[in-house]
Every structure is written in C-alpha cells, then in structure tokens.
Image 1: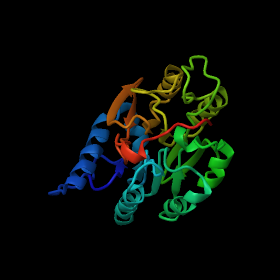
Image 2 (image 1 turned 90 degrees about the horizontal axis):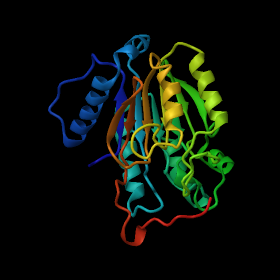
Image 3 (image 1 turned 180 degrees about the horizontal axis):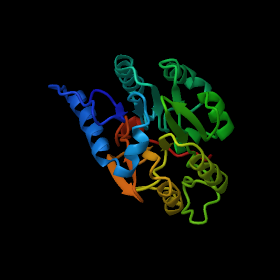
Length: 267
C-alpha cells in the first residue's frame, strides 16, 4: 500500500467516478463504506455542513520501531499535500515524544495548519508522562474539543488509570473526569460531532468501559456521525447504539519483527 492515509468525506453526493490507482481505490472504498454505514438519524446533522469536510488520518505509525517509519510518514504527508484536507490527525502510537524525535513531530505539525494528535498507549512508553506528551506533541490538552469546518471534533484519552475492570498491562479506560466532559460536550451545541480516541470505543480491543461510553454516544447519535480509533491494527466497522465506529489500520500494519521488535516500557 503506497500510503497509510484514510480520508473521510462527510458528503454522500460527491463521490467522483474514476479509474483509480490501488491507493485511490482503497481510499474510495473506505470512503464509500463510511458513507453507507452512517446511520440515517445522523443525516440531519451532516446536512448542516455548508461544504464537505475532510480529515486526513494516520494511525499507529510506530516510528521508533519501524525501519522505514520516516518514509511511511513522508508518503502520508505527500498524499495530504495533494489532497488538502481540512485537518490531519494522527490517532496515537506515533513516535515517542522524546527530544530525539523532535524532528519527526515537527514534520507532522508543520505539514498542515490543523495538525492534530491523539495520545496512544505507546506514546507514554520510555517513562514519558502525559503532560510531557501533550507539550511535545503541541496538543491543547490530553483530551480536547476543536471545530473543523462545522464539525466538532472531540478527542479522548483512552489511557486513564483506575479502571474497575482493569486486566493489567497498558491502561485502556476513559475515566470519570473525561466521561463528565464528554457528556457536557454532547449536551451543548447542535453541530455534527466526530469522536477520536486511540483505543477503540467499540469492537475489538475496546476500552474497559466501552458499554458506558457507547451509551453516552448513543444518546447523542443524531449528532455523532463517526467515531474513529487506531490501536487495533485492523480494518473494522462497528455500529453500536446507532453510532458508527471505524477502526483505522496501522501505517505499519502488524509487522514488528526482526531488529525492530517492540519492547514494553513502564509508564
């Protein structure tokens, strides 16, 4: 696959017929699957958009363990330069936010005026704290809201500790403070909403309190047009309580072998 990008266009009427390359075919197929999967009850929210809105999305680059991670990022950014989406978003497990990765982080941040980040579990490896990650990625906070072309993007941090159902290993939980924040965000405004989290909020490898989060999102299904995540390294489309969840595959897929095999470090 030539690029790890997946561009979501929230406009059912502007799918352009082409004779695509493999990359273009895959992007178009992903777009079509999302358009088909959007619940009818969210169409009213989508129709409030004055123009189509595009996100360029990359997930799980794992720059530090991929022998050609920089080349993969460069391919994505080149595709985005041609496509000119409204924002680009990396869904976590991007690069350890350490001084030695300042250049690759700067490259992503400088590629678009709206370069956005989600914290992945491996972004907190090597003893990196959440405040350090937020600062080094240039994020407004570990979770945040931002408006993009009439869509409210809600970014969650799925790395909270304190899960009553914790099974050990990396935390996978959206804690009470974020739950209250999410409810408040969904209770205010009428614009369509996209939710992003590194860990899935539904489907394979979902956060420990996926049922709780799913119920909250389902109560606002007329506004929540899509939930996107990385982490699972799979392609998956899941419908829960009238809300569509899209798992975005890894830019590095599942190859972590040889000299670049991943090692786990305490947070």
